[in-house]
Image (cartoon, rainbow, N blue to C red):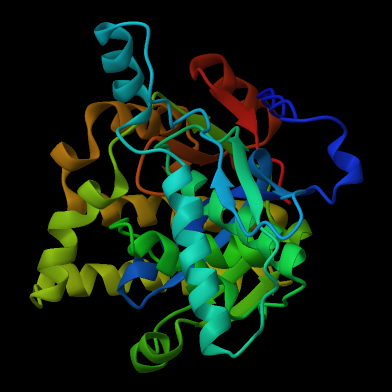
Length: 359
């Protein structure tokens, strides 16, 4: 099981006396239907306790101060011991950090409140973040930072952004930064638990930024494994070609993406069914999980998915398990329909694997 990173030390004294606010948002696993959420499809996702992001807001203690500031986190270094250290850090974490997400959040939160004519007080604050979510592994680390930050701002300003509005607000924070993303990550991170999402009403989703959501009881989620590797490619890069083809009306992409959405619809029926034996239940879900990935693979191609990602998929499958991406690559969710012996067998052959803890 992964170990959680420690919280960063407080910048001054005993912050428990100055209104410090700390909020947490969890990583998520896309179980079925992804990536059709970005194409007016359907998905099922679950938030997990294995990884999370925390954001801490410290109100400014100077009288009448309206100052807003941000502390750099693990991905925001601006000073390095050497050129090679800079190169290694950038290769590992990319060019961009988490502060840009919090800045975008503050801009969009302010805009949301202005549009809704919600008055905000003037007390300034400092924001900082910490995350245990492995970067670029398809576990929605960036959106978890924004969701946790939004919860801090709502508490600081005593403002209630309705739960139904939160995913679209979080998504806009990321799209403003050029991050290519669908709604499912933000929905399940805001609502938590397991959620079946329907974005097929394109007109309504475009107008409101919301779909139709159905909670799936967590007891219906089978035992799952999470497998992750080194940081993968940016999800926007991975999606770029398919997105262009879909927008151009490519018949194959449109038809295949609809099939991906149908996988989620059929999986929802299995998850909510009381008519199947346990073995039928697991085998049906395993078959749908494999079908989901195979459809994705047909659209994106092996070159875009990468050999490391394909190895993470194919290793559990060689042992009779089902596997698919949790997001756009970098991490894989595995279902072992034959039980504990198969699960232990997968664990022996796969590195960086842990039991999923749904939240």
